[in-house]
Image (cartoon, rainbow, N blue to C red; front, side, top):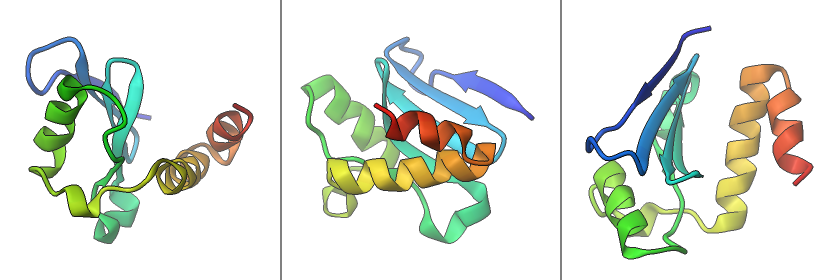
Length: 99
């Protein structure tokens, strides 16, 4: 499985991680967006900003400020759990659900 790590803004607090077909964006240590290339028609799934102005800048860098399409926390976690579960045969999704 291919894994890569990138800092799109060259700042260590904003990280993009590619794991197989799943692309995850982190603000600090929190997943704030993801995209699964196996489900490309869904596009990037982005959470609403519940944190700081810095995280807001990270979100805007991902979705170009399209706040209307951002998901609330519950919907985001549900979709992320499904994406992680399908990537790992269920093991990663189970770990997220256990929190």
